[in-house]
Structures are given as structure tokens and as C-alpha cells.
Image (cartoon, rainbow, N blue to C red; front, top):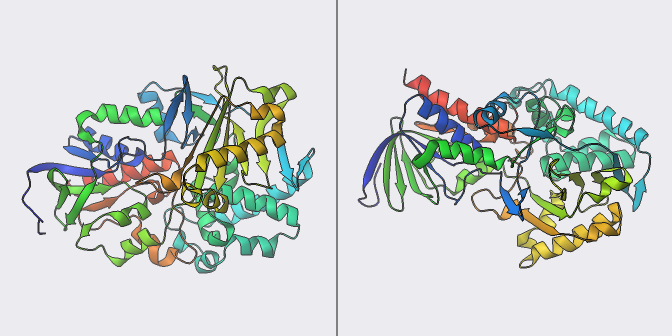
Length: 454
């Protein structure tokens, strides 16, 4: 390894790159084991794909915000930091919009949609969460895109459209760019598609008082001065025994490095020597999804007056999904909605340029008044975030393996390379794309290091 120039050197046991939930979890586990750790975060905040902002005392979550059953690591952190949860509001009547009409009774439609979701869950049971490329018939499943599967299997065009919106909203990837194996892997790692899509008993069952981002802040506070914000890597030089981490203001020498970033984000790192092909494939073939999250704040949750839950599935778009995000102890009404996949790209900051948020606000107001009437136009606050424009993240909710890529790219997601270990939610065999998955991956990377030292 050759340094470009002489710099002050500090020696540490482990450098963790990235202060999202995965990097923070790895750091805490290693510190608990007595190792000297430094966490480097290029951005000026911790939390990765969670982000809470304050609007007149109303905590508004612009990133990941839900938790549910069977997520023990996150539950343990909530207890550790004295954080409580509250149920996602579900009482009232949900709305379904299609062809410019509000569907009053969608019971039959939902039954038909659920039958196909069950069929996909049956397929997902044969997909190992940590090795999806080893599933039976994996090559065919990976070569089949979701739009092709829907076209072949679902005769009713209304049911087909319903499924397309549901599943592309879940993955933030257009149906013609989403392999069936990638979708089944997402189902496998979260228990089932029913769980991933569900509220009661599902992945959207609970929210954290004060916001999910507050948990990441508490983790960073516990780590204290070990976390360095606004500190991007200049270069990472590695071999089997150690690494040199060049920074703008100096150099760190470390026995091990945990890279806790989405695979595609690792492409921006200057790494010497170049990484093996299996890892390079993982980084290049697993792009981030496309999503814009919008939050509308009202003086009160007026939709409840008419017996509505605030939940909407709009098959006409561009906002496919809306939910009530009001706090139970707050006066304000809050609605959260999403632009995903093709709609997120078409209405992104990059596509619209300056004033993109204003355009999206006008579109939101138009659709919300269709759903809830004229009172939806009386906004107290509106804020949105195009995650594709967030530096060092560049998308969401998570990375999604490209069609046909699992066989060559999958094995490189997790396997250590010399002294480099990989974390991030995409590397987890359980709850991939969720905070719980990020925690699992961070702990797994830490355990790799600790096992090698015993």
C-alpha cells in the first residue's frame, strides 16, 4: 500500500465507514467487546435512511419510520434508550381509487389480490434469505421480471394493476426492472409479502415516539467522540492484514474495516487495490430504488370526521399510497404519501430541476382533494424528500438486485475481502431493507471481526 502523501497517522482497531443503523450497530458491538473504534460519516448527520425534522413541534419523518413484530434487535435498542412505540392508526375506511373513481366496496378485489400475494408467498418459502441464488429454479425466477409474471399469471387487468402498484411501491422499482427472485427474496427476508405489506401484525404496525431517527442519534450519543461527521474517505487501501484509511485531514491505520453502506454507494469509494469481481458485481448490479416521500401536515386529522382511516391506494397515480401518520398525543393531522419507481423518477429533483418540491406539492394537493375533499387543500405544512437526491444515499428504500444478476453478484454482497467487512441492510439475510436488517448486518460484520481475533 502506497500513501499519496505524508499525513498524521492514528492507529485504531476498527474503522467503520457509515453512521447509519448498520454502522452504528457494528460500532456498539465492537466497543462493547473492548475494541477501539472510529466511525466515519461523510454526511453531517447520522441515521442513514432515517431522518426526522421538526415542524412547529411536530416531528416529521422523511425516511424509515415503522417497526413491527419479530424485530428483536430494534426492540432491544428501543428498551435500551427508553424509547416507546405507538400503533400505526388504522381505524376507519380505506380508499381505493381507480379510473378516476373511488371504489366503495373493494372486498372482492382485495380477495383476488390476496390470492396472488399468497401464491407469491408460497414461492418465497423456497428462497433462502441469505442465499437466494441457491433457490430451486433461481435462474428462471431471476430472469423473469414482475411485469412478465403479472402478464402471464393475472388475467383481470384491474387486479393486475392493483398488484403492480402494491409491489412496485414496496420495492420502489418499476415492474419491468424487478426480477421475480428479488421480490421473492424481499418476501422471504421479511417473513412474507403479507407481513411486508401489512399493518396489524405486519411491518408497519408500530411507530417510534419522537421518530425512528432518534434511535440512531441515541446510538451515536453513546459512541460519543468515536463518531466523526462530515468526514468522507479520500482513499481506502487494504490487504489481508490491515487497512490505511486516508482522510482529508489525516490517516487512520486499522486492523479491520466495516463498510456499512448500500452496495451501490460503495462504487464511489477510492479503493486500492481494486476489489474482486464478485464484490464489484454486487456493487454495480444492485442499484438503489427510486422514492420520494411526502408529508402533509394539517391543523387536525379531518379525514376521520367522515370515518376514513387516511389510508389510500391510488391506482391512477402518481401517488400510489397514502397513510395517516398523525401522533396519538398530537393535535395535528399528518398524511404521508410516496412516489415510487417510475413516478419518483419522473417527478424527481433531477427531472424537474429547481422548484421540484413546489410541483410535487401542487400534484399532492390535487390528488388529496380527490381523496378527502376540499379540506385537503388547507395545508399547514408540506415537506418532501427525493431520496435519489440525498448525497451518500442516492435512493431508497434499499438496493434491489437487477434481473439476472443474483448468480454472479449475490455471493459478493457479504463475503469479506481481506480485512474489509460488509454491512448495510442489503447484506442481511433477514429483514433486508429495514432498520432491523441493518442492525442484523452490523452485528454480523462485528462478529466476523471478533471471531477472527479469538
